[in-house]
Length: 127
Image 1: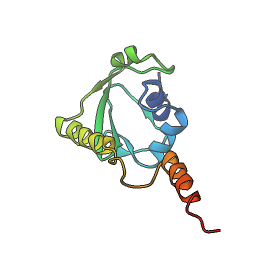
Image 2: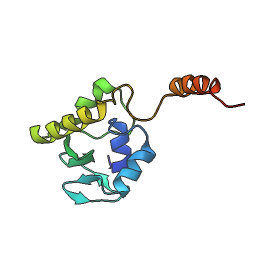
Image 3: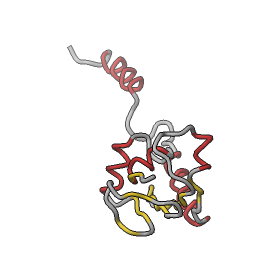
Image 4: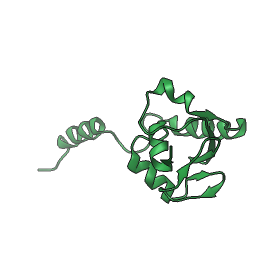
């Protein structure tokens, strides 16, 4: 069995859509055995996939090939995560930085804040 890299990535749920998988391969964010590839490249068992996401590089070994999308519980039968601990820490730091939210009252006003200010200033307009 031969499977295109973009289809395989979609089948094992590393991307939400096949077109996203194709775009990621074209942009060089996905490599096979540390080589830049095209979306039509066919993968083999024991190939190593490298995915670059938000500054971290995730590595997966292909255990078996498939041509249909599988449920999340079955993904472990087809790929094995070989990502280093340093890369996982990089990704966790990125996620933490993204989850911080501005303090109330700083930054752009919310829609409710703008309405309240508008109501307040209506009473102060000069006639």
